[in-house]
Length: 172
Image (cartoon, rainbow, N blue to C red; front, side, top):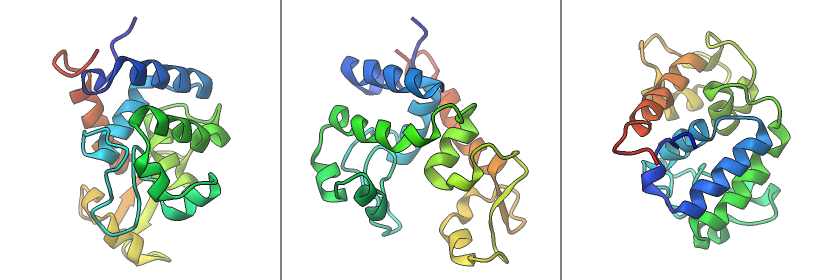
């Protein structure tokens, strides 16, 4: 079996469930693990909260509105085990089944779904765009500090975490 990025940080049941979810979505299990590592600060905690005060929680930082669309709340999601919360990760990604061709698509489905399937040059957030607040909330992702955050810049951060997760000390 192919080693799973960050697999040493989670239980065998978690690893098995992530592989099953990725198979069902047609994406890489290690890419999914890298996204969850990024969103949880490598903790894989279902109760980790977003430091920016957005109210987001969990493995893929479910926003309160998103939790409602999944017929739950962020409080209920935070109370689940990591393995239980994976059911909601699966539910969240199902509408994207067959469209998650790479790490960029997978991470955009979490951060900014309009970026799924777009080229890496696509600007997701611009300082001078329609909603400069979104740029400010994500300014740390503007790697070249040009006032635009592209899909490629966003993906580069998660790609680096994927590479780290695939090291022998972290993969399982």
